[in-house]
Length: 157
Length: 434
Image (cartoon, rainbow over all chains, first blue to last red; front, side, top):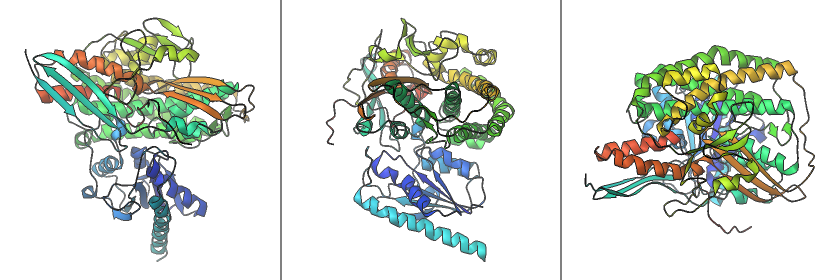
Protein backbone atom coordinates (compact mmCIF):
# COMPACT_ATOMS: atom_id res chain seq x y z
CA UNK A 1 0.00 0.00 0.00
CA UNK A 2 1.28 3.46 -0.88
CA UNK A 3 1.85 5.67 2.11
CA UNK A 4 3.58 8.50 0.28
CA UNK A 5 2.66 9.87 -3.14
CA UNK A 6 5.28 11.99 -4.84
CA UNK A 7 4.12 14.16 -7.73
CA UNK A 8 6.60 15.87 -10.04
CA UNK A 9 5.29 18.82 -12.04
CA UNK A 10 6.98 20.49 -14.96
CA UNK A 11 7.75 20.50 -18.65
CA UNK A 12 10.76 18.44 -19.63
CA UNK A 13 11.41 20.65 -22.63
CA UNK A 14 11.60 23.83 -20.56
CA UNK A 15 15.08 23.73 -19.07
CA UNK A 16 14.95 23.76 -15.28
CA UNK A 17 11.17 23.29 -15.28
CA UNK A 18 12.03 19.61 -15.90
CA UNK A 19 13.28 19.21 -12.32
CA UNK A 20 9.95 17.87 -10.97
CA UNK A 21 9.65 15.01 -13.48
CA UNK A 22 13.39 14.32 -13.21
CA UNK A 23 13.17 13.81 -9.45
CA UNK A 24 10.43 11.25 -10.24
CA UNK A 25 12.82 9.54 -12.69
CA UNK A 26 15.56 9.43 -10.06
CA UNK A 27 13.18 7.92 -7.50
CA UNK A 28 11.97 5.32 -10.01
CA UNK A 29 15.52 4.09 -10.34
CA UNK A 30 15.62 3.42 -6.61
CA UNK A 31 12.59 1.10 -6.80
CA UNK A 32 10.93 2.11 -3.54
CA UNK A 33 7.77 0.11 -3.61
CA UNK A 34 6.25 2.19 -0.81
CA UNK A 35 6.35 5.23 -3.06
CA UNK A 36 3.65 6.06 -5.54
CA UNK A 37 5.36 8.16 -8.19
CA UNK A 38 3.51 10.48 -10.53
CA UNK A 39 4.93 12.53 -13.38
CA UNK A 40 2.14 15.08 -13.84
CA UNK A 41 3.84 16.95 -16.68
CA UNK A 42 2.41 20.47 -16.89
CA UNK A 43 -1.09 19.38 -16.04
CA UNK A 44 -1.15 21.02 -12.61
CA UNK A 45 -4.89 20.48 -12.25
CA UNK A 46 -4.27 16.75 -12.65
CA UNK A 47 -2.79 16.60 -9.14
CA UNK A 48 -6.28 16.85 -7.65
CA UNK A 49 -6.87 13.25 -8.69
CA UNK A 50 -4.38 12.06 -6.10
CA UNK A 51 -5.85 14.06 -3.24
CA UNK A 52 -8.66 11.72 -2.32
CA UNK A 53 -6.30 8.96 -1.23
CA UNK A 54 -5.28 8.68 2.37
CA UNK A 55 -1.63 9.31 3.03
CA UNK A 56 1.02 11.94 2.59
CA UNK A 57 1.60 13.85 -0.60
CA UNK A 58 4.78 15.57 -1.73
CA UNK A 59 4.88 17.82 -4.77
CA UNK A 60 8.18 18.56 -6.47
CA UNK A 61 8.16 21.59 -8.73
CA UNK A 62 10.36 24.39 -10.00
CA UNK A 63 9.33 27.48 -8.03
CA UNK A 64 10.30 31.11 -8.36
CA UNK A 65 11.23 31.87 -4.79
CA UNK A 66 13.74 34.69 -5.25
CA UNK A 67 16.52 32.46 -4.03
CA UNK A 68 19.77 31.49 -5.71
CA UNK A 69 19.20 29.07 -8.62
CA UNK A 70 19.31 25.51 -7.39
CA UNK A 71 18.04 26.37 -3.90
CA UNK A 72 15.83 23.57 -2.59
CA UNK A 73 13.16 24.50 -0.05
CA UNK A 74 10.56 22.33 1.60
CA UNK A 75 7.38 24.06 2.70
CA UNK A 76 3.78 23.41 3.59
CA UNK A 77 1.08 24.31 1.14
CA UNK A 78 -0.54 27.47 2.35
CA UNK A 79 -2.08 30.23 0.33
CA UNK A 80 0.39 32.75 1.67
CA UNK A 81 3.23 30.94 -0.02
CA UNK A 82 1.83 31.10 -3.52
CA UNK A 83 0.82 33.87 -5.85
CA UNK A 84 -2.37 33.25 -7.77
CA UNK A 85 -2.76 34.33 -11.35
CA UNK A 86 -6.48 34.81 -10.96
CA UNK A 87 -7.25 36.03 -14.43
CA UNK A 88 -5.79 33.67 -16.97
CA UNK A 89 -6.52 34.12 -20.65
CA UNK A 90 -6.22 30.43 -21.21
CA UNK A 91 -6.34 27.11 -19.41
CA UNK A 92 -2.60 27.11 -19.86
CA UNK A 93 -2.46 29.75 -17.16
CA UNK A 94 -3.70 27.35 -14.50
CA UNK A 95 -0.72 26.31 -12.44
CA UNK A 96 0.09 24.67 -9.14
CA UNK A 97 -1.02 27.68 -7.07
CA UNK A 98 -4.44 27.63 -8.73
CA UNK A 99 -4.78 23.86 -8.40
CA UNK A 100 -4.01 24.02 -4.67
CA UNK A 101 -6.37 26.94 -4.19
CA UNK A 102 -9.09 24.93 -5.87
CA UNK A 103 -8.35 21.89 -3.72
CA UNK A 104 -8.53 24.02 -0.60
CA UNK A 105 -11.85 25.57 -1.58
CA UNK A 106 -13.24 22.12 -2.30
CA UNK A 107 -11.87 20.91 1.03
CA UNK A 108 -9.83 18.32 -0.79
CA UNK A 109 -6.38 19.27 0.50
CA UNK A 110 -4.61 16.27 2.02
CA UNK A 111 -3.81 16.74 5.69
CA UNK A 112 -0.18 16.05 4.91
CA UNK A 113 0.96 17.96 1.89
CA UNK A 114 4.47 19.19 1.41
CA UNK A 115 6.03 21.00 -1.48
CA UNK A 116 9.65 20.75 -2.45
CA UNK A 117 10.43 23.84 -4.47
CA UNK A 118 13.56 24.20 -6.55
CA UNK A 119 14.58 27.66 -7.72
CA UNK A 120 15.17 27.51 -11.48
CA UNK A 121 17.86 29.37 -13.33
CA UNK A 122 16.23 29.23 -16.77
CA UNK A 123 12.97 27.81 -18.09
CA UNK A 124 13.61 28.68 -21.71
CA UNK A 125 13.10 25.83 -24.17
CA UNK A 126 16.01 23.49 -23.61
CA UNK A 127 16.46 19.81 -22.91
CA UNK A 128 19.04 20.37 -20.17
CA UNK A 129 19.08 21.41 -16.54
CA UNK A 130 21.34 24.32 -15.58
CA UNK A 131 24.36 23.29 -13.46
CA UNK A 132 22.93 24.58 -10.14
CA UNK A 133 19.61 22.80 -10.71
CA UNK A 134 21.46 19.65 -11.80
CA UNK A 135 23.09 19.68 -8.37
CA UNK A 136 19.72 20.36 -6.74
CA UNK A 137 18.35 17.17 -8.31
CA UNK A 138 20.30 15.06 -5.82
CA UNK A 139 19.32 17.24 -2.86
CA UNK A 140 15.63 17.23 -3.79
CA UNK A 141 15.65 13.46 -4.30
CA UNK A 142 17.24 12.99 -0.85
CA UNK A 143 14.57 15.17 0.71
CA UNK A 144 11.88 12.88 -0.64
CA UNK A 145 13.73 9.86 0.75
CA UNK A 146 13.97 11.53 4.17
CA UNK A 147 10.25 12.18 4.12
CA UNK A 148 9.60 8.58 3.16
CA UNK A 149 11.60 7.44 6.19
CA UNK A 150 9.64 9.77 8.45
CA UNK A 151 6.34 8.44 7.12
CA UNK A 152 7.55 4.85 7.51
CA UNK A 153 8.66 5.44 11.10
CA UNK A 154 5.37 6.99 12.00
CA UNK A 155 3.51 3.99 10.68
CA UNK A 156 5.78 1.60 12.56
CA UNK A 157 5.30 3.33 15.91
CA UNK B 1 -18.59 59.11 -30.71
CA UNK B 2 -15.09 60.57 -30.94
CA UNK B 3 -13.42 58.59 -28.33
CA UNK B 4 -9.82 57.97 -27.31
CA UNK B 5 -9.19 54.52 -25.95
CA UNK B 6 -5.98 52.89 -24.87
CA UNK B 7 -6.12 49.39 -23.52
CA UNK B 8 -3.12 47.32 -22.69
CA UNK B 9 -3.60 44.18 -20.68
CA UNK B 10 -0.65 42.05 -19.70
CA UNK B 11 -1.15 38.45 -18.87
CA UNK B 12 1.66 36.44 -17.51
CA UNK B 13 1.34 32.71 -17.38
CA UNK B 14 3.33 30.20 -15.48
CA UNK B 15 5.30 29.23 -18.54
CA UNK B 16 6.55 32.69 -19.41
CA UNK B 17 4.37 33.05 -22.45
CA UNK B 18 2.62 36.39 -22.58
CA UNK B 19 -0.68 37.22 -24.18
CA UNK B 20 -1.19 40.96 -24.26
CA UNK B 21 -4.32 42.67 -25.52
CA UNK B 22 -3.60 46.03 -27.13
CA UNK B 23 -6.23 48.52 -28.34
CA UNK B 24 -5.63 52.05 -29.60
CA UNK B 25 -8.44 54.32 -30.68
CA UNK B 26 -7.97 57.97 -31.52
CA UNK B 27 -10.86 60.38 -32.06
CA UNK B 28 -13.17 57.45 -32.53
CA UNK B 29 -10.97 55.83 -35.17
CA UNK B 30 -9.72 52.39 -34.25
CA UNK B 31 -6.03 52.20 -35.13
CA UNK B 32 -5.11 48.99 -33.45
CA UNK B 33 -6.81 46.04 -31.75
CA UNK B 34 -4.85 42.86 -31.38
CA UNK B 35 -3.59 40.05 -29.26
CA UNK B 36 0.15 40.20 -29.10
CA UNK B 37 1.96 37.02 -28.30
CA UNK B 38 5.42 37.53 -26.91
CA UNK B 39 7.46 34.59 -25.95
CA UNK B 40 11.11 33.64 -25.84
CA UNK B 41 12.32 31.65 -28.87
CA UNK B 42 10.96 28.21 -29.16
CA UNK B 43 13.35 25.37 -29.84
CA UNK B 44 10.93 22.53 -30.36
CA UNK B 45 11.57 22.01 -34.05
CA UNK B 46 15.31 22.09 -33.49
CA UNK B 47 14.88 19.49 -30.77
CA UNK B 48 13.42 17.08 -33.32
CA UNK B 49 16.34 17.36 -35.70
CA UNK B 50 18.53 14.26 -35.58
CA UNK B 51 15.98 12.32 -33.51
CA UNK B 52 14.89 8.87 -34.57
CA UNK B 53 11.34 8.01 -35.53
CA UNK B 54 10.93 6.24 -32.18
CA UNK B 55 11.57 9.46 -30.28
CA UNK B 56 9.59 12.06 -32.22
CA UNK B 57 6.20 11.41 -30.64
CA UNK B 58 7.64 11.23 -27.13
CA UNK B 59 9.31 14.61 -27.54
CA UNK B 60 6.35 16.32 -29.18
CA UNK B 61 3.93 15.05 -26.52
CA UNK B 62 5.90 17.15 -24.06
CA UNK B 63 5.51 20.45 -25.88
CA UNK B 64 2.50 21.23 -23.80
CA UNK B 65 0.85 19.50 -20.87
CA UNK B 66 -2.65 20.39 -21.95
CA UNK B 67 -2.20 19.54 -25.64
CA UNK B 68 0.01 16.52 -25.03
CA UNK B 69 -2.15 13.79 -26.61
CA UNK B 70 -2.90 15.87 -29.70
CA UNK B 71 0.73 16.51 -30.50
CA UNK B 72 1.53 12.87 -29.92
CA UNK B 73 -1.18 11.60 -32.28
CA UNK B 74 -0.22 14.04 -35.01
CA UNK B 75 3.43 13.12 -34.58
CA UNK B 76 2.61 9.42 -35.01
CA UNK B 77 0.55 9.87 -38.16
CA UNK B 78 3.23 12.16 -39.59
CA UNK B 79 5.97 9.61 -38.99
CA UNK B 80 3.79 6.85 -40.44
CA UNK B 81 3.16 8.95 -43.53
CA UNK B 82 6.88 9.62 -43.97
CA UNK B 83 7.99 6.02 -43.46
CA UNK B 84 5.08 4.29 -45.18
CA UNK B 85 3.88 2.47 -42.04
CA UNK B 86 0.36 1.08 -42.32
CA UNK B 87 -1.68 0.76 -39.15
CA UNK B 88 -4.40 -1.73 -38.26
CA UNK B 89 -8.09 -1.08 -37.79
CA UNK B 90 -7.66 -1.80 -34.06
CA UNK B 91 -4.91 0.83 -33.76
CA UNK B 92 -7.09 3.35 -35.56
CA UNK B 93 -10.01 2.67 -33.18
CA UNK B 94 -7.85 2.86 -30.05
CA UNK B 95 -6.40 6.17 -31.23
CA UNK B 96 -9.87 7.53 -31.89
CA UNK B 97 -10.82 6.57 -28.35
CA UNK B 98 -7.79 8.47 -27.04
CA UNK B 99 -8.63 11.53 -29.15
CA UNK B 100 -12.23 11.50 -27.91
CA UNK B 101 -11.04 11.38 -24.29
CA UNK B 102 -8.60 14.23 -24.79
CA UNK B 103 -11.20 16.30 -26.65
CA UNK B 104 -13.91 15.98 -24.06
CA UNK B 105 -11.45 16.57 -21.23
CA UNK B 106 -10.20 19.81 -22.75
CA UNK B 107 -13.69 20.94 -23.72
CA UNK B 108 -14.95 20.27 -20.18
CA UNK B 109 -12.17 22.32 -18.63
CA UNK B 110 -12.66 25.15 -21.08
CA UNK B 111 -16.42 25.30 -20.60
CA UNK B 112 -16.36 25.14 -16.80
CA UNK B 113 -13.12 26.84 -15.81
CA UNK B 114 -12.75 29.57 -18.45
CA UNK B 115 -16.11 30.22 -20.07
CA UNK B 116 -18.59 29.68 -17.22
CA UNK B 117 -16.91 32.28 -14.96
CA UNK B 118 -17.17 34.71 -17.89
CA UNK B 119 -20.85 33.98 -18.46
CA UNK B 120 -21.52 34.44 -14.73
CA UNK B 121 -19.29 37.51 -14.63
CA UNK B 122 -17.37 36.32 -11.59
CA UNK B 123 -13.81 36.84 -12.84
CA UNK B 124 -12.47 33.33 -12.36
CA UNK B 125 -13.47 29.84 -11.38
CA UNK B 126 -12.64 30.35 -7.71
CA UNK B 127 -15.79 32.23 -6.64
CA UNK B 128 -17.79 29.45 -8.33
CA UNK B 129 -16.40 26.85 -5.98
CA UNK B 130 -18.22 28.46 -3.07
CA UNK B 131 -21.50 28.99 -4.93
CA UNK B 132 -21.54 26.03 -7.32
CA UNK B 133 -19.44 23.36 -5.69
CA UNK B 134 -21.40 20.51 -7.26
CA UNK B 135 -20.79 21.96 -10.72
CA UNK B 136 -17.03 22.23 -10.15
CA UNK B 137 -16.94 18.69 -8.81
CA UNK B 138 -18.83 17.52 -11.89
CA UNK B 139 -16.19 19.11 -14.10
CA UNK B 140 -13.41 17.44 -12.15
CA UNK B 141 -15.23 14.10 -12.30
CA UNK B 142 -15.46 14.36 -16.10
CA UNK B 143 -11.82 15.36 -16.38
CA UNK B 144 -10.90 12.36 -14.30
CA UNK B 145 -12.78 9.89 -16.46
CA UNK B 146 -11.13 11.36 -19.53
CA UNK B 147 -7.75 10.98 -17.84
CA UNK B 148 -8.56 7.39 -16.92
CA UNK B 149 -9.37 6.63 -20.57
CA UNK B 150 -5.93 7.97 -21.42
CA UNK B 151 -4.31 5.96 -18.63
CA UNK B 152 -5.97 2.72 -19.67
CA UNK B 153 -5.59 3.02 -23.42
CA UNK B 154 -2.17 4.65 -23.57
CA UNK B 155 -0.49 3.53 -20.39
CA UNK B 156 -0.23 7.00 -18.88
CA UNK B 157 -2.51 9.96 -19.16
CA UNK B 158 -0.39 13.05 -19.47
CA UNK B 159 2.47 11.77 -21.55
CA UNK B 160 1.12 8.64 -23.18
CA UNK B 161 3.62 5.92 -23.86
CA UNK B 162 2.07 2.81 -25.38
CA UNK B 163 1.04 4.47 -28.67
CA UNK B 164 4.07 4.25 -30.96
CA UNK B 165 4.62 4.57 -34.70
CA UNK B 166 2.82 1.66 -36.34
CA UNK B 167 0.54 0.73 -33.43
CA UNK B 168 0.50 0.08 -29.68
CA UNK B 169 3.14 -1.64 -27.54
CA UNK B 170 0.33 -2.98 -25.37
CA UNK B 171 -3.43 -2.72 -25.43
CA UNK B 172 -6.10 -2.51 -22.75
CA UNK B 173 -7.91 -5.64 -21.63
CA UNK B 174 -11.51 -6.27 -22.50
CA UNK B 175 -12.57 -5.84 -18.86
CA UNK B 176 -10.89 -2.45 -18.68
CA UNK B 177 -12.67 -1.26 -21.81
CA UNK B 178 -16.01 -2.51 -20.50
CA UNK B 179 -15.42 -0.63 -17.26
CA UNK B 180 -14.75 2.56 -19.24
CA UNK B 181 -17.93 1.95 -21.19
CA UNK B 182 -19.89 1.52 -17.98
CA UNK B 183 -18.51 4.78 -16.57
CA UNK B 184 -19.14 6.60 -19.85
CA UNK B 185 -22.79 5.59 -19.78
CA UNK B 186 -23.44 5.78 -16.04
CA UNK B 187 -21.26 8.75 -15.07
CA UNK B 188 -20.08 10.75 -18.06
CA UNK B 189 -23.31 10.79 -20.05
CA UNK B 190 -25.48 12.13 -17.19
CA UNK B 191 -22.70 14.61 -16.38
CA UNK B 192 -22.49 15.60 -20.04
CA UNK B 193 -26.24 16.16 -20.26
CA UNK B 194 -26.12 18.18 -17.02
CA UNK B 195 -23.36 20.23 -18.63
CA UNK B 196 -25.72 21.01 -21.49
CA UNK B 197 -28.34 22.16 -18.96
CA UNK B 198 -25.79 24.32 -17.14
CA UNK B 199 -24.61 25.94 -20.36
CA UNK B 200 -28.18 26.39 -21.56
CA UNK B 201 -28.87 28.36 -18.38
CA UNK B 202 -25.81 30.52 -19.02
CA UNK B 203 -26.24 30.93 -22.76
CA UNK B 204 -28.16 34.19 -22.34
CA UNK B 205 -24.92 35.83 -21.15
CA UNK B 206 -23.07 34.99 -24.36
CA UNK B 207 -22.33 38.26 -26.21
CA UNK B 208 -24.29 38.80 -29.39
CA UNK B 209 -21.50 39.32 -31.86
CA UNK B 210 -21.34 38.10 -35.43
CA UNK B 211 -18.44 38.06 -37.83
CA UNK B 212 -18.56 35.63 -40.67
CA UNK B 213 -15.13 34.27 -41.45
CA UNK B 214 -13.56 31.27 -43.16
CA UNK B 215 -13.90 28.07 -41.12
CA UNK B 216 -11.21 25.42 -41.52
CA UNK B 217 -11.21 21.92 -40.10
CA UNK B 218 -10.68 18.34 -41.13
CA UNK B 219 -13.50 16.59 -42.97
CA UNK B 220 -14.10 12.86 -43.24
CA UNK B 221 -16.47 10.97 -45.51
CA UNK B 222 -17.95 8.74 -42.80
CA UNK B 223 -17.67 10.53 -39.48
CA UNK B 224 -17.35 13.83 -37.58
CA UNK B 225 -13.66 14.34 -38.26
CA UNK B 226 -11.34 14.44 -35.27
CA UNK B 227 -8.65 11.81 -35.82
CA UNK B 228 -8.45 11.90 -39.61
CA UNK B 229 -9.72 13.49 -42.79
CA UNK B 230 -8.88 16.04 -45.47
CA UNK B 231 -8.60 19.76 -44.87
CA UNK B 232 -11.89 21.55 -45.53
CA UNK B 233 -12.43 25.27 -45.99
CA UNK B 234 -15.96 26.66 -45.70
CA UNK B 235 -15.01 28.98 -48.58
CA UNK B 236 -13.39 26.68 -51.08
CA UNK B 237 -13.79 23.07 -50.00
CA UNK B 238 -11.33 20.20 -49.73
CA UNK B 239 -7.53 20.29 -49.76
CA UNK B 240 -5.26 17.30 -49.19
CA UNK B 241 -3.43 17.35 -45.83
CA UNK B 242 -0.18 16.99 -47.76
CA UNK B 243 -0.82 20.46 -49.25
CA UNK B 244 -1.42 22.14 -45.89
CA UNK B 245 1.09 24.91 -46.66
CA UNK B 246 -1.30 26.14 -49.38
CA UNK B 247 -3.83 26.71 -46.60
CA UNK B 248 -1.70 28.04 -43.75
CA UNK B 249 0.38 30.59 -45.71
CA UNK B 250 2.19 31.80 -42.61
CA UNK B 251 3.14 35.44 -42.49
CA UNK B 252 4.91 37.75 -40.11
CA UNK B 253 3.21 40.51 -38.14
CA UNK B 254 4.96 43.18 -36.09
CA UNK B 255 3.01 42.72 -32.88
CA UNK B 256 3.55 39.02 -32.41
CA UNK B 257 6.55 36.73 -32.41
CA UNK B 258 4.15 34.02 -33.46
CA UNK B 259 3.40 33.91 -37.19
CA UNK B 260 -0.16 34.43 -38.41
CA UNK B 261 -1.94 32.42 -41.11
CA UNK B 262 -4.46 33.18 -43.84
CA UNK B 263 -6.04 31.29 -46.72
CA UNK B 264 -8.90 32.78 -48.76
CA UNK B 265 -9.44 35.82 -46.52
CA UNK B 266 -7.39 37.89 -44.11
CA UNK B 267 -7.91 35.25 -41.43
CA UNK B 268 -9.63 31.95 -40.67
CA UNK B 269 -11.12 30.20 -37.66
CA UNK B 270 -10.09 26.77 -36.36
CA UNK B 271 -11.55 24.86 -33.41
CA UNK B 272 -14.87 23.48 -32.24
CA UNK B 273 -16.98 26.13 -33.98
CA UNK B 274 -15.22 25.48 -37.31
CA UNK B 275 -15.77 21.74 -36.88
CA UNK B 276 -19.42 22.38 -36.06
CA UNK B 277 -19.94 24.64 -39.04
CA UNK B 278 -18.19 22.28 -41.44
CA UNK B 279 -19.29 18.89 -40.12
CA UNK B 280 -22.38 19.17 -37.90
CA UNK B 281 -24.42 17.04 -40.30
CA UNK B 282 -22.31 14.07 -39.15
CA UNK B 283 -23.12 14.45 -35.46
CA UNK B 284 -25.55 12.16 -33.67
CA UNK B 285 -29.12 13.00 -32.81
CA UNK B 286 -28.15 13.46 -29.17
CA UNK B 287 -25.44 15.98 -30.08
CA UNK B 288 -27.88 17.88 -32.27
CA UNK B 289 -30.42 17.93 -29.44
CA UNK B 290 -27.73 19.40 -27.18
CA UNK B 291 -26.89 22.05 -29.78
CA UNK B 292 -30.53 22.98 -30.17
CA UNK B 293 -31.05 23.21 -26.42
CA UNK B 294 -28.14 25.64 -26.13
CA UNK B 295 -29.15 27.70 -29.15
CA UNK B 296 -26.31 26.66 -31.48
CA UNK B 297 -27.47 26.74 -35.08
CA UNK B 298 -25.73 25.56 -38.26
CA UNK B 299 -23.49 28.24 -39.78
CA UNK B 300 -22.93 30.08 -36.54
CA UNK B 301 -20.68 33.14 -36.90
CA UNK B 302 -20.38 34.15 -33.27
CA UNK B 303 -16.91 33.22 -31.97
CA UNK B 304 -18.18 33.30 -28.38
CA UNK B 305 -20.30 30.25 -29.33
CA UNK B 306 -17.10 28.21 -29.68
CA UNK B 307 -17.66 27.12 -26.09
CA UNK B 308 -21.15 25.88 -26.92
CA UNK B 309 -19.79 23.90 -29.87
CA UNK B 310 -17.30 22.35 -27.46
CA UNK B 311 -20.11 21.25 -25.16
CA UNK B 312 -21.88 19.64 -28.13
CA UNK B 313 -18.65 17.76 -28.80
CA UNK B 314 -18.56 16.56 -25.20
CA UNK B 315 -21.87 14.75 -25.78
CA UNK B 316 -20.62 13.44 -29.14
CA UNK B 317 -17.32 12.16 -27.76
CA UNK B 318 -18.93 10.37 -24.82
CA UNK B 319 -21.43 8.51 -27.01
CA UNK B 320 -19.02 7.84 -29.84
CA UNK B 321 -16.48 6.44 -27.36
CA UNK B 322 -19.08 3.85 -26.34
CA UNK B 323 -19.59 2.97 -30.00
CA UNK B 324 -15.82 2.59 -30.51
CA UNK B 325 -15.48 0.33 -27.48
CA UNK B 326 -18.34 -1.84 -28.75
CA UNK B 327 -16.62 -2.12 -32.11
CA UNK B 328 -13.23 -2.96 -30.60
CA UNK B 329 -14.78 -5.73 -28.55
CA UNK B 330 -16.94 -7.04 -31.40
CA UNK B 331 -13.82 -7.23 -33.58
CA UNK B 332 -11.99 -9.15 -30.82
CA UNK B 333 -8.95 -7.55 -29.15
CA UNK B 334 -5.74 -8.73 -30.76
CA UNK B 335 -2.20 -8.42 -29.40
CA UNK B 336 -0.61 -6.97 -32.51
CA UNK B 337 3.00 -5.95 -32.86
CA UNK B 338 3.44 -2.32 -33.97
CA UNK B 339 4.38 -2.15 -37.64
CA UNK B 340 7.76 -0.45 -37.44
CA UNK B 341 9.39 -1.58 -40.67
CA UNK B 342 9.71 1.48 -42.90
CA UNK B 343 8.82 0.99 -46.55
CA UNK B 344 10.25 4.37 -47.55
CA UNK B 345 12.02 7.38 -46.10
CA UNK B 346 11.28 11.01 -46.83
CA UNK B 347 8.71 13.63 -46.03
CA UNK B 348 5.47 13.03 -44.16
CA UNK B 349 2.63 15.32 -43.22
CA UNK B 350 0.07 14.58 -40.53
CA UNK B 351 -2.97 16.37 -39.20
CA UNK B 352 -5.56 15.86 -36.49
CA UNK B 353 -8.29 17.93 -34.97
CA UNK B 354 -7.08 18.67 -31.44
CA UNK B 355 -9.40 20.51 -29.03
CA UNK B 356 -8.28 23.98 -30.15
CA UNK B 357 -8.41 23.18 -33.87
CA UNK B 358 -6.51 21.66 -36.72
CA UNK B 359 -2.88 20.75 -36.01
CA UNK B 360 -0.17 20.02 -38.57
CA UNK B 361 3.18 18.28 -38.20
CA UNK B 362 5.57 17.89 -41.13
CA UNK B 363 8.77 15.85 -40.86
CA UNK B 364 11.45 14.85 -43.31
CA UNK B 365 13.41 11.68 -42.47
CA UNK B 366 16.79 10.59 -43.79
CA UNK B 367 17.30 6.98 -44.84
CA UNK B 368 18.40 5.99 -41.35
CA UNK B 369 15.00 7.03 -39.94
CA UNK B 370 16.26 10.26 -38.34
CA UNK B 371 14.54 13.62 -38.68
CA UNK B 372 16.35 16.22 -40.82
CA UNK B 373 13.61 18.85 -40.96
CA UNK B 374 10.44 19.49 -38.95
CA UNK B 375 7.60 21.95 -39.08
CA UNK B 376 4.61 22.28 -36.78
CA UNK B 377 1.67 24.65 -37.07
CA UNK B 378 -0.59 24.76 -34.04
CA UNK B 379 -4.26 25.83 -33.88
CA UNK B 380 -3.62 28.90 -31.75
CA UNK B 381 -1.14 30.25 -34.30
CA UNK B 382 -3.84 29.85 -36.96
CA UNK B 383 -6.47 31.62 -34.84
CA UNK B 384 -4.39 34.70 -33.99
CA UNK B 385 -5.25 36.62 -37.17
CA UNK B 386 -8.91 35.73 -36.69
CA UNK B 387 -8.87 37.00 -33.08
CA UNK B 388 -7.39 40.29 -34.30
CA UNK B 389 -10.07 40.63 -37.00
CA UNK B 390 -12.76 39.88 -34.39
CA UNK B 391 -11.35 42.59 -32.15
CA UNK B 392 -11.30 45.13 -34.97
CA UNK B 393 -15.02 44.52 -35.53
CA UNK B 394 -15.98 44.12 -31.88
CA UNK B 395 -14.37 47.25 -30.42
CA UNK B 396 -16.38 49.77 -32.48
CA UNK B 397 -19.57 47.85 -31.65
CA UNK B 398 -19.01 48.16 -27.91
CA UNK B 399 -17.23 51.51 -27.86
CA UNK B 400 -19.97 53.12 -25.74
CA UNK B 401 -19.22 50.81 -22.86
CA UNK B 402 -16.76 51.65 -20.10
CA UNK B 403 -13.10 50.88 -20.63
CA UNK B 404 -13.32 48.16 -18.00
CA UNK B 405 -16.23 46.53 -19.78
CA UNK B 406 -14.51 46.72 -23.16
CA UNK B 407 -11.41 45.16 -21.68
CA UNK B 408 -13.44 42.42 -20.08
CA UNK B 409 -15.26 41.73 -23.37
CA UNK B 410 -11.97 41.45 -25.23
CA UNK B 411 -10.52 39.11 -22.64
CA UNK B 412 -13.65 37.01 -22.89
CA UNK B 413 -13.22 36.87 -26.66
CA UNK B 414 -9.64 35.62 -26.30
CA UNK B 415 -10.74 33.08 -23.73
CA UNK B 416 -13.42 31.78 -26.11
CA UNK B 417 -10.53 30.56 -28.27
CA UNK B 418 -8.58 29.26 -25.24
CA UNK B 419 -5.24 30.03 -26.84
CA UNK B 420 -2.35 27.73 -26.10
CA UNK B 421 0.06 30.42 -25.03
CA UNK B 422 2.79 28.10 -23.89
CA UNK B 423 3.43 26.77 -27.36
CA UNK B 424 1.85 29.29 -29.67
CA UNK B 425 5.13 30.75 -30.74
CA UNK B 426 6.15 29.73 -34.17
CA UNK B 427 9.49 31.34 -34.54
CA UNK B 428 11.01 33.05 -37.50
CA UNK B 429 14.40 31.97 -38.70
CA UNK B 430 16.43 31.01 -35.70
CA UNK B 431 20.02 29.91 -36.03
CA UNK B 432 20.54 26.79 -33.98
CA UNK B 433 23.97 25.79 -32.80
CA UNK B 434 24.26 22.04 -32.82
